[in-house]
Length: 179
Image 1 (cartoon, rainbow, N blue to C red):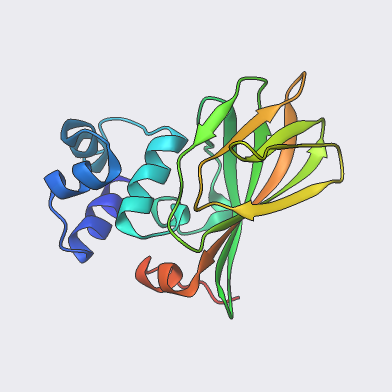
Image 2: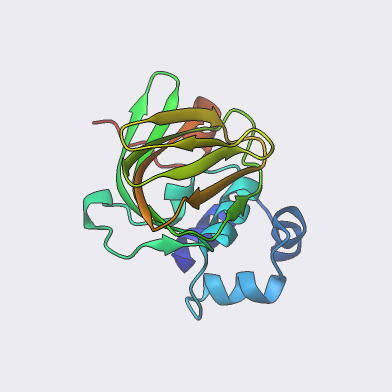
């Protein structure tokens, strides 16, 4: 992941200080990530990719099917399953487990949308202040460009998360995966 982060930052002509300022992540942390001296939480990866104008998958494995290590946050642990280029941009597919702890997610880049489909359990998801409780088989699509939250209701829950990135982010992310 470190070399991908360094490459994306270089492609955008962004200094370590500028990426730190835009993402809210400390320069020391970014340096350690770029040199593979530490792992990153899901919220850190989203902050960095949002600041870089790239999809989350730009920092994950090039072979989505080979991705075995989940990225995790306070409540969400997710594994990238696949990604497709479509006419409107890029879609990344994640299998995620949600814990009962609430996880707030900062806004992603403009145009990013998320779809959560509950596979097992009950969850509370969506834009902060307009969260919805979903049961097995139910889905919700909402803007990822506003602060939003994830939380299992009761025990852990499993969901499929689709990240919909607009065309300009899929191209700038340099990860065109036509299938």
